Image 1 (cartoon, rainbow, N blue to C red):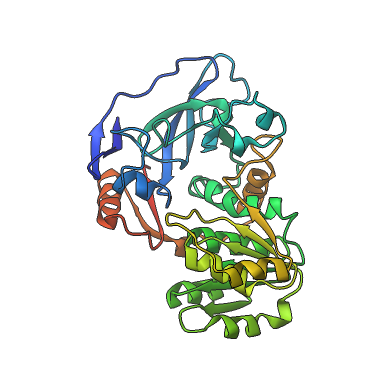
Image 2: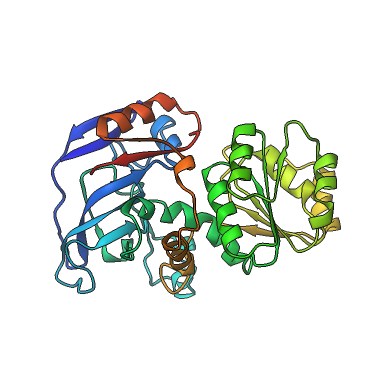
Length: 347
């Protein structure tokens, strides 16, 4: 079978690999149809950030069941499924409390084992989420990134009737913004430094857009004055300046969910730290996207909203292609952030 293989020197190659076979009774073999590149994959490709090399990445994928192990009785060949990449141990104290993201003995498809950027993959039954008949197979590949924002909403007790502020209008931010709109947020503000992303955010339904490159903190806080109460701020960009910005523009007793992963040290001035105290902010660390019962309400909600056509996904896709086209698009990044989702499409 063909597979997109990453080598340690940052080389993205299309190679022939053996088709993986079912080994245990809870294994499922899947024929992959659509697989997306995640921002977290970029350091795995270009900064020696993978657990091993060569590796096939891909944890945002959907496809059809090809074969099942003897213990898998609720799936059958032809069923449409999406990947649930985390595999907790399900037996540690964290797992017993439903804190699956905090499991210390977890495995992860496309990181600690080969992923879905290939024609076929074998995963455990717990790593698959059945898709409803009314959902397209491509939409199934977006469930995992949508649940990232939904997990933050889950930790915050929901976003209904809240003034949601999204700091960072990348793919995760724009998916979280659309989720908030679909789930009854009172208003949704998108903040970014890229006018094209902000224009897209407005087209996708943002109540308000703010450019943090052309407006200073005082100006932005003034623009948010009327929506300063019942505020939920999501920081999705994952940079020290955007974390500081999220604290600075947050309203009184706002919830601040930190979603983006930092790759540089964060140093908060005393005055910025003081705002956390003086505004009595609630800080929420949001890690991955799971809750109990497995894999969580985030996955159920994402599936329901996708089936109801609550998302506009096509503007978020920068490239769709076969193995060779996908590999070229990924290689061309040269370590830079994606400007839209890069999809491998195999049908």
